[in-house]
Image (tube, rainbow, N blue to C red; front, side, top):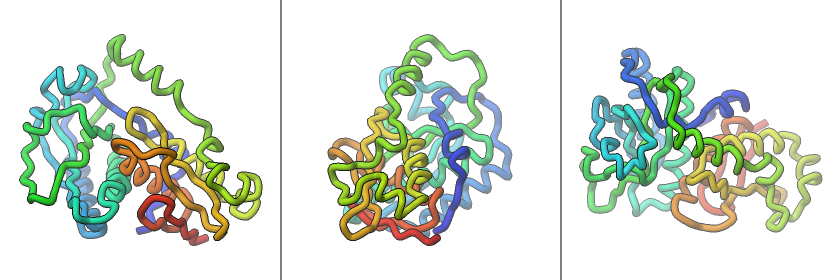
Length: 256
């Protein structure tokens, strides 16, 4: 699936935790529903569903740490635990949904833990589990509180520069050598730098192997790093035409 976005579009996406009560236009709702149908048909082990006017999952201060306000619409990302790489695939597909929502003027946020799962109205089979939620809606324009501002400042200060996502230890070729052979690599790394990640850990790394292919993986496995890998792969592929294999250390096949 060849979906392209500019670096500027990817960088405009940011996590929104405060939503207004403005109604989403029906044409936008239809576009979101169509995107979910496309995703569900395209990706193995992934099932997305949309919830509207359902604030209960984010209604608990304790669960949401007070950082979410006004959430009533969200996507539920369900994965089949029997399917290899289903969490990574869900991350890839989730970022696809996010970028469509952002292009329609909506705010979004990946939420893997800070919600109340008992309040999510979704029927699961024995082999399924909820991987994450994605709230969506119009961002609240009111001035955020001090705690929220402090959190945003910490998150922004931890960001890596694009070249720091290239892993010289895993690479057979240096960054300069890889860039000479693949001039598009710099833009791909910019896209990875713009990808959201759990707790802003930014664990995804890119390198060029002895096989001369570009590879992607995470510097250390942890909670939600599979999700992070999928999101970063989407951003890279949305900027550089081509496709990724799934999995840790997988290859990228450019189509330039």
